[in-house]
Length: 266
Image (cartoon, rainbow, N blue to C red; front, top):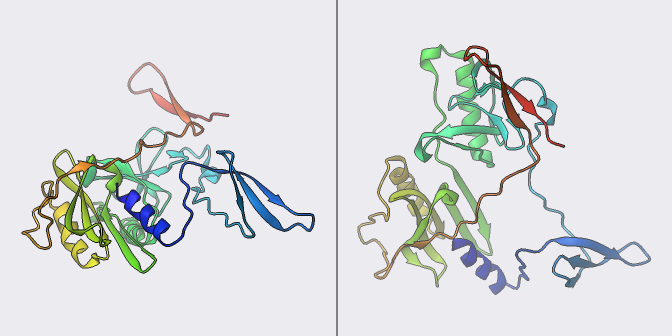
């Protein structure tokens, strides 16, 4: 739902935004200059410049067959950044932090998260470094609430929590029409995330509500609260399932002998 608001903002500023299509071919002239792009829906776009923005691919190939829990989604670890081995057993001398780390977050039913933001990389690295040198009883857990922000056409967009885990969303403050609002996300009656358009001053309070397990919809005590706000479906797309990373086979019969083995798909 909020993605549609951002898309409308793009189009209002002259962006020809096309969703659900890919570039199948770039066409140039005899001088080697780009002239047009062919799209998967059969259409073409005249263009002189193409920007390739493919996102990030976690660099885990060099860890293949090292005995650790490694896959396309990253490196599995506990909340203290200690890496799991291929059997899911925590190691005491291998740590991981940043985009490549997949860790269980207590606020989200211990689901494994991998957060691609520099702020998380900094915070998680501090936890990993501390846990490398401290006594076992003094280890820290990485429990930072995910945060990101962006600026588009003069509008500041900021998010706290994990919106993609929500099933409902409500405009808790402000006005969508004015592009100045806070959208709160809920999962089974609990606040799990919030996104603000030019309302960054409120996001810290929403972060505190998320951390303390506040109910959804949130009670904002009438501060710039729409009179007709009702939760609706968050319309989060289904999570993509990767089908090219390693799978696991468990061998052995006796409980003390059972071991996991990574099987790489080709």
